[in-house]
Length: 316
Ligand code: SAM
Ligand code: SF4
Image (tube, rainbow, N blue to C red; front, side):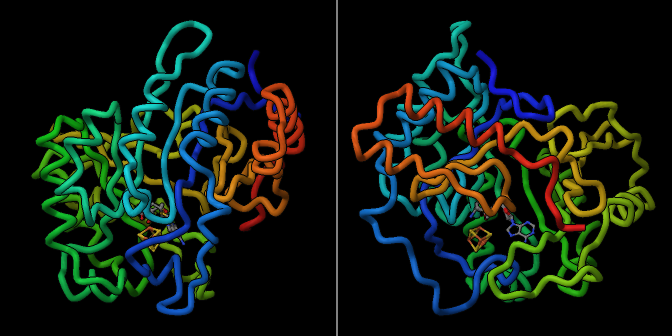
């Protein structure tokens, strides 16, 4: 049975935050100091995560699972979870696509292990190619490790490796072309993300959002582009380089919200089920998991949560 919300959107994608912790402090995401982390006893175990994912995949034909965070690779033994998720099967017998979003800082050590565990796809966040600026944006001097991690991910067989850059006016918008060029030269698929009001430090202002149109015009002035006719539920709008050197994407959450096509739901690291990154309602799956809830109970909670999904976020 499909999971369909009251606006007719079919849920296909489950985003799982495996930890709220992170070894970076990106300015647009976390404050420099004073983060308080969820107590470990409240974080779902891999068995609990697997159970929720299994219900989504087996009962509701969810065909994509993305692991995120915090920084997913700071959680110990991540390949164990990936192996469990890669063993799930949808009612039609196919394997869900397993993806990971990471800051890349440890990828040079774990890329092959992640691949061997059954990870299908990887997105690495990289907002600057300049060491000082990378340090200013992430508050960590890790640029070289991230670049090496991207290389190791390619060597481990991830193809294409996607690279995500959040573009913030006055912070790194002068690097759009350099990042695009780096990706073209290294066989990577670049994704520029519009800056969203998600940051804990209240840095967001509308005039710091560099819109999709600005990003695309900047790239096209140097490397002519043609839109790729695709969208569906994929958040990124894509363009192909006219010289055949791959594609580039933009995730225009602010200027062109894709809520009408959103096919995602989220599981937080402490076991709350959400239907939108910006949702204020949470549905407590952990309580069911830890108090004897049956698979039917969990499936019903998921159906109820999806039934209450908003039409769209309220950024604008
Ligand atoms: N730690 C991992 C990473 O950075 O890739 C995974 C979690 S991170 C929250 C997921 C993605 O959200 C990253 O690509 C990050 O750049 C992006 N992100 C974080 N804060 C954002 C913001 N305020 N606006 C837009 N994207 C943001
Ligand atoms: Fe950590 Fe990712 Fe947030 Fe940066 S964007 S602080 S790497 S969770």
